[in-house]
Image 1 (spheres, rainbow, N blue to C red):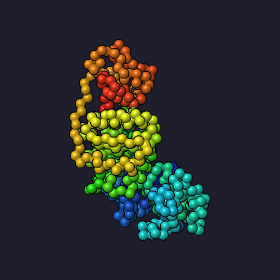
Image 2: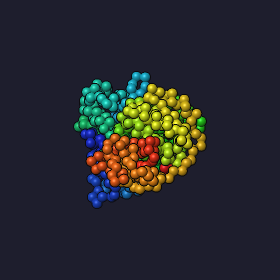
Image 3: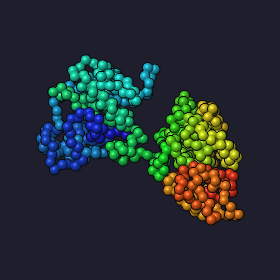
Image 4: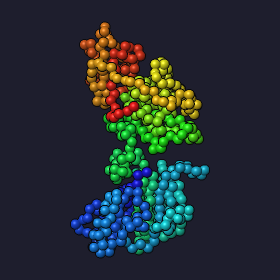
Length: 487
Ligand code: SF4
């Protein structure tokens, strides 16, 4: 997990009203040095035990401050130095929020760890920490936290501090948030003296991205296929198109499965299916849902199928998809036709037009170079995977695809596509069947040409191309560019 250094974690805590020891961040030596006494702390993402490594220094003279800044700024991966005011600490506590994956007594959620002894050496005392499990959707009030804490002075104030930490943890979807120590000052107030956070890159919202952009190393671990999916989403933002490749290799003896999971239901069913099995390896996480276009489904599928290790593709949702399943099947068929290395597929369609989707795939299956099996929503993924070994391939099939030349009829910007008319496939010059099949009335037949209706919108469903290829003569095709090289 990428880690946020202290100076950035402070911003998150500050935004949720957590009191912090006064400090100033310097990424160069300032013209006016901070007033002594200060603690100079090198800001290096992921660096722990900084004091022991000489990355935290007490500086009590301008000379010490100047030299300390110079030396710490020169440390490898150092983003800057935090100069924190030396405060009068009477007592130290420790607190952390972590993601919790559940046990016999507690559902998955968060856990607040607290110790009335903070400071260094907390690692050795982890067994004695107080644990307060909490729901991420309904976290405990400060009052409820106070009732769990030991008998310590100003317990309600401390509980309010901890509740604000929980708010920060949930609000920014962190995986770890640690404050060590929380200092009790001579006036009895609490301040965070040191803090750090870890996060999952895909949990960072766009509006908060600037808070998490810590360094190229920390954030830019995206694979080329993930970067491609980001670009697909930028060009066609409607609906969810999520893809994350596993950072591990498929273990020997497992079937390496590329997944196109649709919505939370699809993900849950797939995890229930594979959770107890060590013979199936998911190469990626994915989610295509929320009413995405067929164009976007096609593009994401091309990315998913491009994983070189993949032996088979599995596509499933909850069984009640919002996306029209015929549109999805059209995208799958197009991806299988146009991929240079198509994958055998197990496809489970469930939702509007699921029968049409299965009928389409069953109709085209015999002309595909890979095996394709379709399933209705009554068949769950745990039964689908019984067919994995019979269709999985050790050697990827290779095919050539070159878009057929034709006349560019028009282009659509969102969702992006080029519509190509093939007049030689329509020698009589009559209106092709696909025009009437467009569900939005976007396609028109005008003076022997396919034109867009300015009063209507293209929803990127692919129905026109599918109908043209299945029921017509291939008069209309759609070219969907990808933002990079895929297999
Ligand atoms: S032109 Fe019509 S049928 Fe074709 S993709 Fe757009 S909305 Fe669908």
